[in-house]
Length: 240
Image (cartoon, rainbow, N blue to C red; front, top):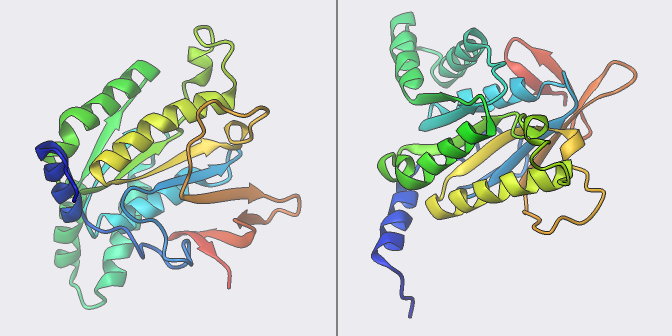
């Protein structure tokens, strides 16, 4: 017999109503990809396409449900994101008229909430807001995204000068993991590769369900999890 609180029962039912993220992109996620509660890490060095890939996946999900986009890097190209959304809408309905595409586009844009953060304090306040009321009120939110998760590391360095990059990353990620588990929502985020390789064992390691690693090779090619990719007007495309 399972005994849970009324709050936990409500949150569980809320999670079951959230849009499913599984099967979002068979090219990027050959195994079917993330489910509710999943953490998706998009890592790479600078200028390897992390933000581009994140926007591409956001555009795909907006056809299913609502997204809360926590903008830490402030590198989001709104026009490019809009183009991705329209491409997805056209692919989903080849017979749609320009008017129908525009109406659907406006609905998708209305399903995207962008929150700008300029410090770790603002990021923490945003996470508190997600935990305390936003996700309780929004049962159509199935995806949270954060661009440049550890952007504020050096600003915090004077206060946390003994904390390694990896430990800083794990501390932030643990907060996000608890929110995802509590509200049955998926989180995708980008992070620089310098944060993902521990020099020592972190006191609190957090499991990551899906890792998308972008690399720029010496020969000019780009890879995603060792698969050759190319950048097109539709974003990151894996070569067959």
